[in-house]
Image (cartoon, rainbow, N blue to C red):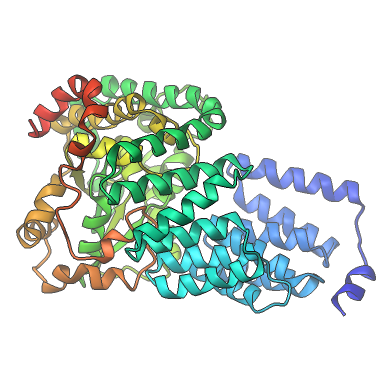
Length: 521
């Protein structure tokens, strides 16, 4: 029926006109004229109502603007129009993941698994989402279904190995990964992920030199794809150095003085720090408190609060220039947009709850946050720099400008010093209230550390924060630490760098000043 309807559809527009409209929609998006993009695609939809691609693109646009019900409507229409529902349902699931609505992604992927045309990739994608929900047994069942469809499927085999590791079956996990690597799969990124997985397994087995060899081999596979990111990373680090010089104490004082002119104070805190410094553990503890709602690793503060302030500026304009030039009316709008989009993303009204935006990437956005939210408090996670660098180095991250720094220990140390060096420069200049929270203090004395944080945030003690691991089991966790935070705290990761001392030794002299500054000598 769908095939016939598609073949007989009445299109009221030429292919050339549609191409032009797609181009106009894309250009409007680049200009941050998101409404223009949506209006253009809506018009294209009216002219060609049976075009599946338009519905997919329109749904994506709505989703990226946090209009989830509208996005779902477009996706439902796309599934009704296509003669290949499983294929479209899979694509819809991917797009939902792109704009961060995991619940919607799972709904469409689950529907795809019930379709006769479901592929192995559908089961693997759903299994990975289910795994991050902490439902390892259910994820394993999905992977087994994938392997029944295609026993040679490399992503399914890799997922099965990872699930074996998470279940503590390390020898079985190692055998599965070695078998996958020996098959010589042609996709470098998949082979790299398998190498990272092998490194993690060998680390858990205490075979540290072999683990490091696996990590290095994985990174060698990724390095060619990361070459183009080097220039961008250098510009980011230069921008950080520039802010160290330009965001002076007087600037921060002046911004703090504008607090009352920006409108009513909000109950808001930012949780940042270098990646792998304990931000996820602290976030899960705080989200367990009934007076708190956390937002995990979104781009809302950057995309909806800061980025609109940069409209009309040349690309090389300094952060200071952008922030100093912003009129109060525009700053107020950035504040309003941030909270509005965050509530849409979370699907809840914050009410009287304290919002905590957790994202390590916000460390270099502290000046923007201080300008737009002079009433915000800052929590900065701190951990032994040697453990942080090692952990970042071991993460299987897809190539991007920042992750390209982690392709060598030298690059990892350089990036760490850039990010945390920036914080140490800003620290004595800060006018917003801030608190450094040590990872080691959290795992050595969770209650005392949590009481200190709650007191800083103006919150009463609540015993539920001590059961954060139970709370985390009911949440989808985006961080790489998703498995660890569903377990009670342990000291296993404290001093982990000692197992790789000889590999880190050449870089310790560069880290020594930071070790001293943070008290980790």
